[in-house]
Amino acid sequence: MRVGVLGTGMVGVALATRLVDVGHDVVMGSRTPDNEKAMAWAASQPERAAAGTFADAASHGEVVVNATAGIASLAALTAAGEDNLAGKVLVDVANPIASYGPPIALEPVAGDSLAEQIQHAFPAARVVKTLNTMNCDVMVRPSTLPGEHDVFMAGNDAAAKGTVRSLLEEFGWPRTSVRDVGDVTAARGLEMYLVLWIALRMTLGHNAINIRVVT
Amino acid sequence: MRVGVLGTGMVGVALATRLVDVGHDVVMGSRTPDNEKAMAWAASQPERAAAGTFADAASHGEVVVNATAGIASLAALTAAGEDNLAGKVLVDVANPIASYGPPIALEPVAGDSLAEQIQHAFPAARVVKTLNTMNCDVMVRPSTLPGEHDVFMAGNDAAAKGTVRSLLEEFGWPRTSVRDVGDVTAARGLEMYLVLWIALRMTLGHNAINIRVVT
Image 1 (cartoon, rainbow over the protein chains, first blue to last red):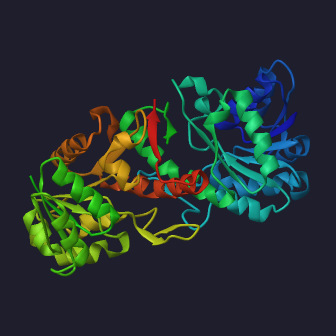
Image 2: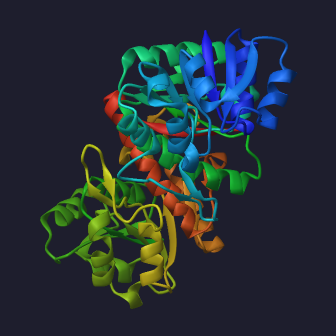
Image 3: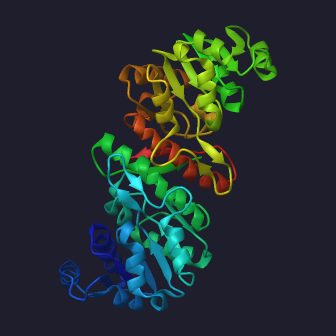
């Protein structure tokens, strides 16, 4: 599948690398066509990898992954272009971090979410919030942690969630660990969970943390 | 130990009953001395149980449990009396639910928490936020759910957290499942997690839900 990954940070690199690894054809997008990190990433891949602008990446992708910083996401997606996002599965993994604190501050929060803002701004995109509840090493290789633990999805489009589920399974997530928590408003819970995750990271002293839903 | 439980709802009844069950001497407090639910609860217990006002319960307790509704908690604690809370371990299990929605709305949220508001209003109380991340059946009898799952604590006073840890162990929580996530500001994460918990409840269709931290 053709995937556009927006963002050249740790999360973007981890996702783009793993997507190539499992067989997809990836363009990493950034603000400029000659971003050093994006070009270095593309050069590091054996095949099926290129760098370009946000618009290049979005235009390329059947699936587009938002791995930009939360505060920059709407601007990055605007640069990617509404037409390039129309009808696409838009996988939003960003957290709306206004300040790392401590204590951490989210914006938007509570009565809104970044995923909802993106869905509102790009109504023809099929937004699925997922993977934002963990470190990027765990995102792309869940066996980084022992035993069973979960990844969540929230979005309005069932078919888009099906596509995301398939990608997550390719990353190694067992089907029973992929939990659909509802429509895009459920992204509020996924984003607000970050505040607990940060507290766990602070007290545990490392990033290799996820949760298992027990019922 | 003498424990005051503020609140006569499902959570207050579950906690008060279990506290009597494991050997403590409990007064359930409410706004009036003749609250029917509190008196019925006290009558239903074999021993070591009484009903009274918020002040009666707080005055009785070496440990005081806030199991009132979040929006009523500061008023209930004010009625309980600053002097009756001074030096006490104040176990805050309330969630600051402004609207059940859907989508659920918390108040305060993000830049504050109910636990912090309580600690600020009653600086001589030793507030520990805990148990608010699950249904009351799971709170008092963790074996309601299979396998390992966790309960969190946040608060400024290490000795108070030690007392709470002992109570949680009496309820059946294994020592390794009681996770101290930091000072009272970490209560933000515990309270904001409720939004994810509600989404899980909505999609799973029941209340028997908790999480296990996997590292």
